[in-house]
Length: 78
View 1 (cartoon, rainbow, N blue to C red):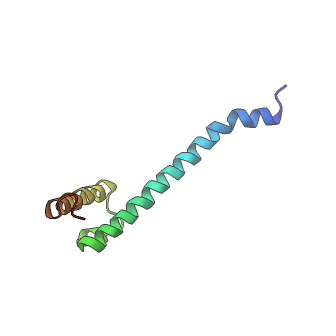
View 2 (view 1 turned 90 degrees about the horizontal axis):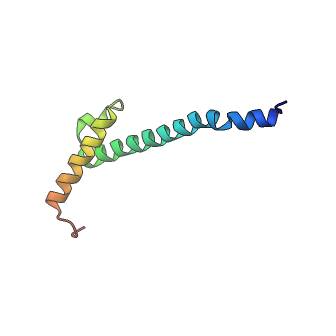
View 3 (view 1 turned 135 degrees about the vertical axis):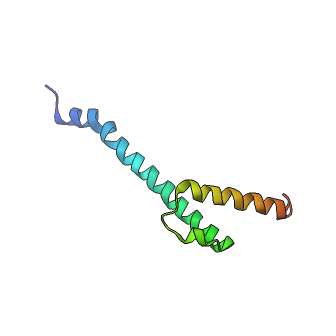
């Protein structure tokens, strides 16, 4: 006979995995939103005003911004 505790322990990781994954996605989304707002503040690029901007576009803006900064301000001068 399987006790209730054993059944809960057996199903525990399966139930926990979607919650852990959701938290991970939420953290990524919060960080991307913060990155979008920081880039908007620094670049004033109006495309960044759109809160529905794709994640890949936010990352592309960030890469472009960092490349531009490193070209204008060589490493070690900051």
